[in-house]
Length: 282
Image 1 (cartoon, rainbow, N blue to C red):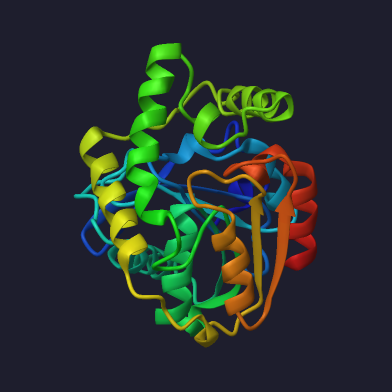
Image 2: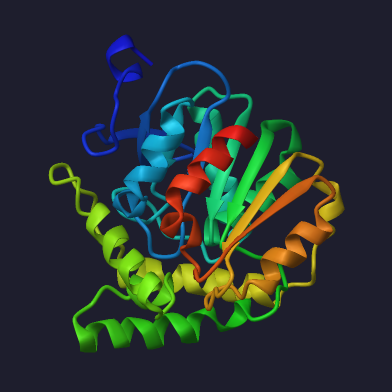
């Protein structure tokens, strides 16, 4: 990383780059200081680079090198989208290695939190610490219903001409509705060099992967010895909050944060508190 890119200060104007790994051209962005252990962000269902909350990216990048990327077949990354979480984890590892990194911290949100769990189990020496939010363990209660919930609220969004994330990520209380509006406005702050939207084919492949994850036998999470920060809102309808509590109970070295009157996107609703906790944890 050269000097000029090392001082990129905001998510709004950091350039999108490409890197080839295992035959896939990945679109990625990085910012923050070029020292210490980098934090690799692992994204949620249907998300491209522009779906990360700028306050969370900039907040963590104030003290750490942050690397975000489009999964294979998503946004500006080439290839076909995998239909298993395990294959997505293998893709992330190949990109991390192509970047020349031998140790990273992982921040996985929703589907990204599932990917992070697999990476920690498959490549334990690669991962120093994990932050997983709005996510659950393999075989977790209600995870196999994400497909139906996603389709219903996507239809609801089309009918009301609102972004489905307003319904999927936030509660329908006054606080939740306001937080959703503010979050969606922040996602529009970047005006140039925007990413390509997710395709229907990629979205369906990811839904299939999450559905499979929800039907799997529970994994032995006691093998994940790294420190883990586990976070969610208290009313997550996509990955029911009891899964987050279950993760905290089953991980040997974890700490739990549950935000009040918040849904799946609780870490974005409470971004100031979350960034502070994440920085202290890292």
